[in-house]
Image (tube, rainbow, N blue to C red; front, side):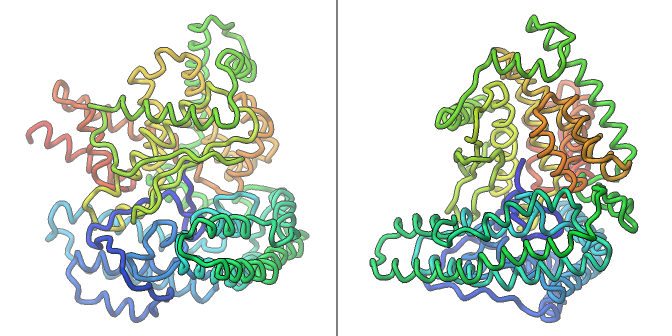
Length: 609
């Protein structure tokens, strides 16, 4: 899984990659200016009377710079000439201004004569229109999400933690000053978030009680820690020690200021978040699905379109999930037969047998195995996916990982797969995760976009049906290419992971449109994936707070397989897998509905039409 969020762009956006087709990466010798944003009216006026290409670049650049945390995550602050010293603004007024800009950009786009544009520009037009039309449609439900929860990828308090303890560059005195500046801004931002929680409560949207029960101990633990023992301080201290040319006095001063900011601003802000959750707790629902809210079914339908990039309905997703679960049950049964295992084993029993047969790894051995798998995958892709991205990918061991972060656009940070080191890791489950997150999965798709000469937004934006669909497709591709020929238990791990994606279709729609309880979803998840109850609980509560997102994986993969099948049938002997992959990856990020046309263009070219 690559990190991401939906309309709130600042919540730990790491899924996006960027190429600056019209904005060359130039590192200025002079210090960048403090971050600032132009008034929306001025931005709209500046976009008038521009030619199409200039409008696309100008409007998106001005939109992007409204989210300083996103600029840092993408490694774009230097390109934009601003410092990494500000946090996203979540105030009601700022959100309304951003919504007005989204509407104005969409209206201005539609003033261009699409028919007069070149074929390449028509694709840019369509992707841009889909992107901003999707944002405008989402405005109706701007208060329906959960900005604070237990889930590290979507909760805004975790977004700040991740930004400051991992993503924030600290390689110079200016970087260090920016870090302290951001610490001092946490209180103001969290107060905006708290105001947002209360406005949501006024609209009848409160995070469910069970989610608050998970979130509060974590927030309390951080809020009550001594400032100097928090990662905000210890990580800063470690990074400061690596900066050359800084005097001991400068380090002491920066550390002292950081400690004061953490103790006087950051930790009290976390305490206020916890207090706000407790104040709202009496009005929090026991029910966990979004269908309980006014117009909740329409909200979920909007989420499905947003995440899958298709017009699929909740009923269709649920039925598709049941169909895929049945298919994968049979494929797992056949795999067990081929391994000489009893075909009537339950999925948990299959998992136990696979763990015993393939072994368990821990600590540095986990990192080393992932590095081996990634290196091997890179060597096996010749003639299948060419070229591989220029950016490299590294493996970083952390207590709880399992996700990918894109490289920085300025080259200051490679792509990274964060591997879990907490507890033993079953060897049989590791290949599929490596292929999904790195090569040929997320890293290939996301980092390849950085090498394309396309408008910036077509690299920055992420359409999860495409992005997660590609990563799941990559898992299956590895099997099709014979990478599991000598690792049958690894293939069993692949099937079990694919089963989890099928289960997600059933569980996500069950929770949010069919009145399932968390316990209903957990039981179904355990029965069909064989994963431990703790894992099932973690997954189900992810789906509760991130409604619709988990459907993108399987819907996207099946869509890509359908496109490949269409190309194979249309081209016959002319079909080349490497050319199909180039058509899928070579257009940058796109909703699946528009990817259909890109693949159709490839079929026309390859058939000589």
